[in-house]
Length: 353
Image (tube, rainbow, N blue to C red; front, side, top):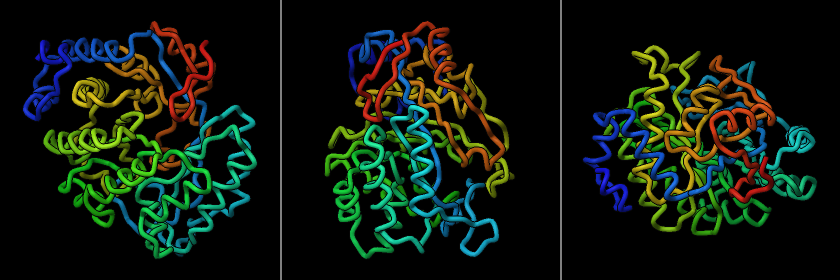
């Protein structure tokens, strides 16, 4: 295995299974870190100044892992107007954010013009902010409501000024898992086809994975092979971002048998660095896994520390809250033995600390 990795040869499914289930954890971390430095030789760790507000919590998809959504007509359901959302973007911009990751539920009452206005007005009013808006499933909702094909929706968003998509909504790209935890979202292709079309049209995106619920190693391998194959087609993914499921207040909570802690996260991160050989960046999640685990992850194959997340509501709905500042991120990266660097959504370096 070591010789194959060092030679840059692609790992096969059986080898990925071994990484997930049998590889000694410390050896796995060493292999992943060596692979990271072969791709990115500098001891630099990037982060983005960003915020993650929401425009609605109304959703008709009923995902069993989500504590954030409310059905249409629920007394706690809400939807923000365009100007209300833009005030959140303005607050993020004033705090120095260069990325705003905007997402919401699947709200059938919102017309396509609502989404286009959000992109267009963000570009016009806050040119320093990249509108990193709308997951694949939200774009599918736009297509259903507008009567356009997904390609047409993405073309309209691009025309309004969008250049990137977040990777949320992937969960685990396994037909078995998605049928179990999000049956109304459809199979893996419903996510993959949106990102494939976005890449065809020149947009960049991230690939995410939310693990730690009902998946097995084979499901993880299905996910990795799907995104690795898609990356071979267009090279449109900038990074892979895994995080662990937060069960609080969700329908899925009662099915979680045990907490999969930091060692499981480090294994997932390191194995993904080795298996996803065509992904330029692997992101450590201080937000979902804790700041110290995020630091350790920088020695297990990760080269990016995510974002500041000035606002975040989805994890908060599951009673998981973690906050930081630019200054603390810089300190955490330095303490881990790396040089902090602020980046854009598409990984251009803005400044080094």
